[in-house]
Length: 383
Image (cartoon, rainbow, N blue to C red):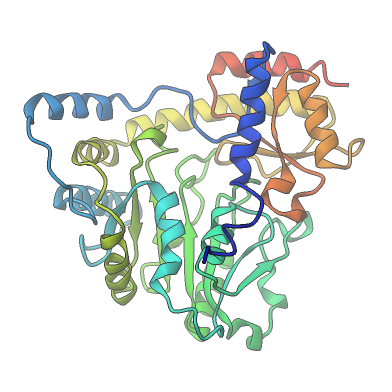
């Protein structure tokens, strides 16, 4: 018998949008595709050079460890200590993943959902994988409503103690995809205090945390005394290494990490050794990340000005590489998408990220500076 969730007539929503953009290109249209957060700028040179050297020096290929090589985990540990002043031990507190998406999807497998008493919570607008994971394992879910009035994060104060008792996993993503909004330290502290009180785990998706405008957003690694968080990190965005599939899971909760590792191992082998070697060079280098941040600042400023001049409202938009947009004259996501498409710009309707995304679109700007300039010229023609 097939898993009923898989039998639903749908596919991963971002793939559908991407296919539409590719079809337009195939038909000869000059399309600027701003649908997928896949950086188009140069991959970190050190990673490429490391792989080239490794392949030249190693003529035998063998299975990598499922949870990462000692050198890779040590590099992540050193990165965490250097940037967040937190001491995390390899093996106990860290293991590798094939990008953060894989680990995010698999995490729910660590828990028993058969008694139907615990729930997986996530925002009503967000990364589709949280829901896909929960529904694949048939876990009870709760979508927490968010909107511009709540700052696009759940209002923790309106949830009762009896409701909190049902929460087992709480997904938070800051900077948030798709809105790029962030939470402050007080919000994160309150969430961790609630997790301690009610016994749930804060699952913190932090893959955009190092791409900020002026001040690094708060994250789980800032809370050294807590063991109620599990952090999911990736080199995909910070180092422009989406194709390498290099991620990491971190937590001070040794019990959770022990069983998550046991869950991860039989699913498949680990990240290829040569990719881990490239990852070591990326975790050890901060200069290229600072350079990428500066590039995004420049693009952000350029595109923001063009959008504001055409009357668009930008919500968030100071971190990561997304703009979450609305416009008073075009109240639906479909109208907004068609508006941009009339100028050869393909964007993602907000409804892809949940029903509460109606009236919004997400515009990706992890494109070249030259393409950003071309984009701004087209935005100026929107009427």
